[in-house]
Image (cartoon, rainbow over all chains, first blue to last red; front, side):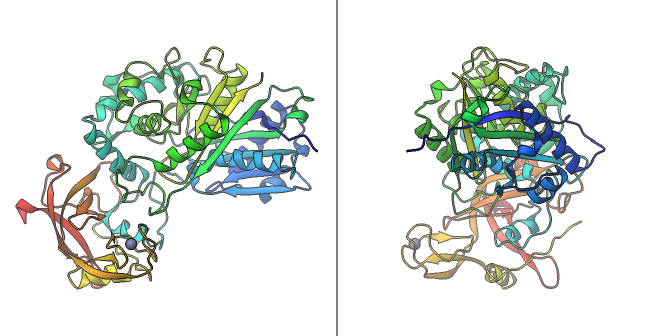
Length: 386
Length: 134
Ligand SMILES: [Zn+2]
C-alpha cells in the first residue's frame, strides 16, 4: 500500500501592488510565479502544473510558454471570478494528491486597475437572468452587493456607520504592512463617514476594495518533496467549494428566503470544519474575501464565528484586531492592501503560519481563507508545520 | 443615457412580450403551485417540469434597494437612480426601478405598484411607483 500524499504550500510570491504597473499582464504572472518557485526552493522549470481562475488574462498555455516550460501534466482554470481563488489551490492540491503532477502553481496576475476594471459594468450578456437586470441599470458589483447589504442592515437595525469599524481595522493593518497600497495611511470612523457614497445606503468609497495591478502565486507540492527543499511548508488541511442553484449569477442571489444568508459560504464552512475536524474556536486567524466591507460581517456569521446580526458589534469591540479573538484580514485585505481576487489573502494566511506576516498573530497554527461570497465560492483551512 | 434596451433570449421572451402587452408574467408550478420569476425548466421546490404562465397583479413592496451615486456615467443613473428588489404579493422578487419618490424617502416595506414603460419602439420595461403616488 502506498503512503498517502499530503499536499502542502511550499512557496508564495507576489509582484508589487500598484495602480499602474506599466507592464503586461503576462510579465506580472511570470514574476509572481518565479518568486513563488524561488521561495519554495525550486527551479521554475520544475513546474508540472498550472492553475488559474476565470477572468485571468494569462491562461495556462500562454503562461507555460512565457515561463519557458516544456511539458505540463496538469492545468485548469477554476470558474466564477473571485469565488474561484481557493478553488484554484484546491485544484492544485487534488492534482498533487492524485499524483498527476508533483509541483503545481496556482496564480493570478492582471492589471486590474490600469487595465480592465472589475468595478465597472461588464460586457453585455444574453444570459437569461442578466438581461432582466441590465435595462434597470443594475450593472456593477457594488450595486448588487448593496441590495444584499441594505436588507441585512435593515433587518438588524444597523446603518452604514456600523461598517466603519471593518474598514478602520483593516486600514490599521495596512498602515503597518509595507506591501499594502495604504501603508502608513490609517483612517478614522469619521474619515469613513466622510468618504463619498458609491451606492446608498450601504457602500461608501472606503467600503469598497481597491482595484489593483499585480500578480500572486502559490506553489503546491508533496509534503515529502517539500521536506527536501529549503522552504517552510504549510499543510493544506481542508479545501472546499460550493454553489447553490436558483440565482442569476455572480452576486445576483435575489430570490432566497433571506437574501444575505450566503448559503454557498455556509456550505463551504460546513465542509471545511467537517474535513479538518476543527471548530471556529480552533481558528487563529482568518482572511475573508472582502470585495466590500459588509461581506466581512456576513462571513463572520456564515462561518460560525458570530451569531447572525452580531458581527458588527464583534468588530467594533476590537475582536478582529491583532489582539482580538479572531484577527481578520491582517494584511489590510482587499479594502486596503490590494485586490488580487483573494490570492493575496491566501499568501497572507501562509505568511501568518510561517511567522513572516507584517502583523504577526502570536503562534498562529490554523488559518481560514475564503473566496468571493455571494457567488459560487470556495475556501481553505491551512495548518502550520508541526 | 436614459434607456438600455433589453436583450431578449428564448427563456425570457415571454416576459418581454408580457411587458409590451401590459402584463407582468410569472411561472406557476403545476406540481406544487410554487411561483418563480427567473425562468426555469424545472421547479426548485418539487422538480416538476410543468408550469402555467400567469399575470401578476403587479402589487408588492420594496424588499431591498440601492441608490447609485458612483460612477456617475453608468447607464440610467440620472433618470432612474433607485434600483429596487420588489417582492410581489404573489411571492416572487424581481429587479426594477422605483420612480416618483425621492431617493431619501425609499424604505424597505414601501408598498409599490407596477406600471409599464415603453423605452423604445420595440421594448417595454416594468417599473414601480409608490402606491400613494400612483
Ligand atoms: Zn413545484
